[in-house]
Image 1 (tube, rainbow over the protein chains, first blue to last red):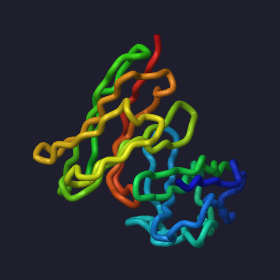
Image 2 (cartoon, one colour):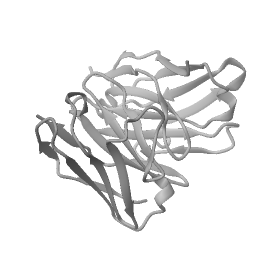
Image 3 (cartoon, chains in turn blue, cyan):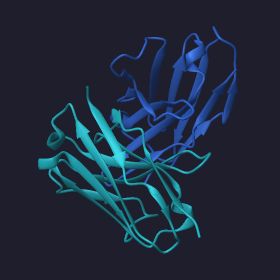
Image 4 (cartoon, each protein chain N blue to C red):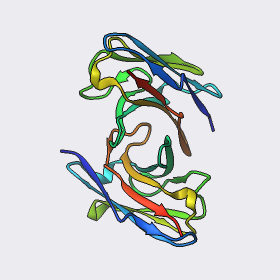
Length: 107
Length: 116
């Protein structure tokens, strides 16, 4: 079972700036098995990116995903006020699923 | 609209049991794997269990294996999570979420509190 480590824990930025969030797996994983989610306070998570780099329906193109092997990245090109939230990466394995501990993007 | 709605949460004493439910609508429920994911207060997401579309494959996190049982009733578009031998550390919001490799539809969650 691969352990996912996200960094940094907290990212303090301003609207209009770019954000780069990292997700590192403890062992090499298939790119099709990495997803990213956004969660705002009091809300359920929302799928942003799947298969490492495919945006989910309705997700704006300022969100992009990349990576391979053990290192994966979520990039937000220009932060909008509604993007300040917690972001989680997730890995699928044949008998388990794993979430990273999350990165909080705050103003 | 594709929806999942959880219910059945509540307060239970340590060592007790509780069953929570998830009802789907707006999509062909029987075509999708469904997961339970929980979130303890102030903490991150923890995957709990998954059942495949036809119930052939069922997986559990180590933290709940042997205590929790996931089951689905495709005819009624519903899913349940039977939780036995509950511990204080099982206190969380429990979400059901659709999908195998990723989770694209989530419910709003139901709160389970384990406390004496």
